[in-house]
Length: 79
Image (cartoon, rainbow, N blue to C red):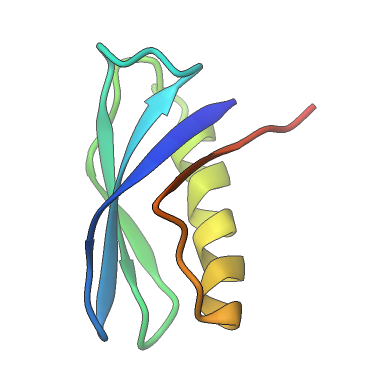
């Protein structure tokens, strides 16, 4: 599970901090380009060694971009 919080939202991009397993002492940051749907990790959380947490968040942001409604905060969970 990854907890995420919106840092910045403009017409062109969305920036989120993410916290693997909701560990608020382990922050990463992901930037999403709303124009072309690409995203990149600006700062990787320590627990995100294999990009699993950031990848799941990136895919969630792709979905949010389609709807045009970006959440202030939330989580992504997977099995």
